[in-house]
Image 1 (cartoon, one colour):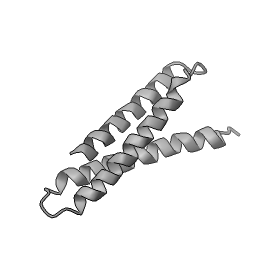
Image 2 (cartoon, helix red, strand yellow):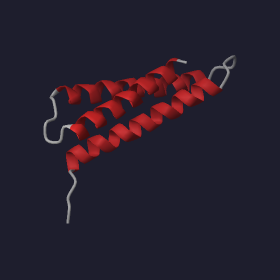
Image 3 (cartoon, one colour):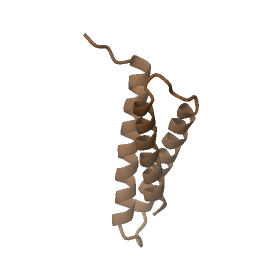
Length: 92
């Protein structure tokens, strides 16, 4: 259950940070980097908790699978943002 909560918190913070950055082009506040770092930590924690919960025998597997999936999606999305931030987007 905690894996799903951590994954959802990370995913929600991704969508909020993306919305804020789109609404204010060129005026990014400095706290967004901290938001991204905290969201990545939450997503990694959710991923680890999901893996550990899937290894237990007496757990209903739907919640750990959902937490694992949401955390993995969040890690991929934040990873794309970090990659674009490092490499940049070039228009030809």
